[in-house]
Image (cartoon, rainbow, N blue to C red; front, side):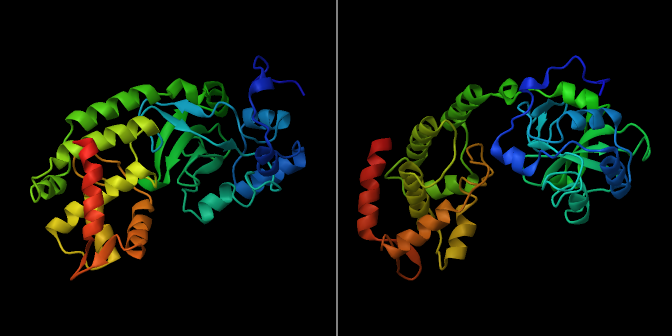
Length: 320
């Protein structure tokens, strides 16, 4: 087959043909009959450039997975990211007519039926890349857009056509801002404000400057991890200890559910500048384990035991 669209591109280092990709994405070369069958099922004529690429390598996971954008997406402020490109057929899980293919995303996830979803993304279904036929009609040349399920299926324009999209993919290294992000985070931990609720909680025990303690603790934790997040490591556990102590000075906690509700506004989802911006369930596991070990006891509400509090203040001294 003579290449019309990609004759000048070297695809020898384009695909990441690991075992997962081969099992879930890469299909056999599509025949004209398979292409016609897919178009009939999907309701749209596939772009010639897409068909050409699929006849060279029918679906897969590219090594270059990022496409620059001029506006933010649900993935990043300056690009969209993909996991794989769906091939033509139905035998692979991530093929156009496969079990997690384009029709599945429309029928089961509610994505707009205005085109063909050709790329899945790292969000595992919460955003997709689509060939959008809204302007050109079912037989025209579709644009490539990013669709964000979490923002009412917002579309972000990526490329005028599939060929331009493939040529525009770049390595994620282009957007690696790890060092700058770490520097910015450390500055925020030094100078940023805690949530209003946490600032109020600080006032109940002025024997310790908890503002300074938490800043120093979070700084050490962030340097160790390379980013600011609370997990199940010892420094995160100490952060949970401190927050729980402050919490119980200020309000009564009658259940695990009340603890979860009260915990989140302090740092995890705070209205201050110092925040992890989200959470996993590590702090819930910490609470359950602390109760089981007797660190947290019931005394007209959940509270830290005296022994637990004494050990906590010995640790706090290291961060004053």
